[in-house]
Length: 288
Image (cartoon, rainbow, N blue to C red; front, side, top):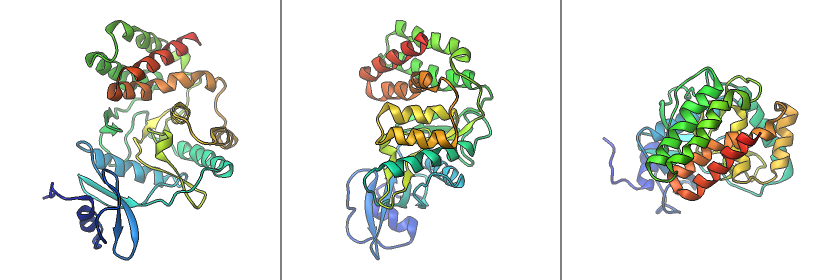
């Protein structure tokens, strides 16, 4: 039985089998803990049912692509996750170029279907603090509408973040998705929550990705999220990506379409400001 009163240091010692030196070096979750012998690790407490299981499965699925690096999982249970601590440095253009190339290779590793969870990962997963259901489908426009856009529109309306009349903008986008989505592509292996805070620029010049909401999806979705919240040297990241796996014509016009999902998630979690940004993205997609 898991001790619900454990702190991060106690969880790290139990899950790694190694004593901990002193108190956690940071508060909150994740917390940095120093193992005996001087090894720093990160300890994270799951925010909801199945959250740790989903994150571990996602990290392992991304690692299996042998493309973008992720922190090694050192121990976990249903409540706690212990990973290696990444020593970070400053972003630079050459690292960004390599990251773009590696991200293309990650996507090319593929997924069985759109919405497929990682092996051993739950269908009821998470993106940040929001629930995210991984229901597989074969047609991206229909899947994106039914399992990414419309569920969060309904939740935002129920919470009063979106006004009922505003939902129609998203419904119109979904109705036009077969035309707006561009050429059909096979399911890509997505990180799924690829904002800049989940991109660690390693001191060794290699990027690591953390906190995935991994699933099978459209590769432009990861790239659109990188753009949404800003990413250092994004032009170089995209250049590296395009050299490895050129994007379909018109991809720039589809950025707003792929940003609908993360913006709606943020609207559900953080309120009206993101709802207005989601509405602007929907209207931009309809204008194409």
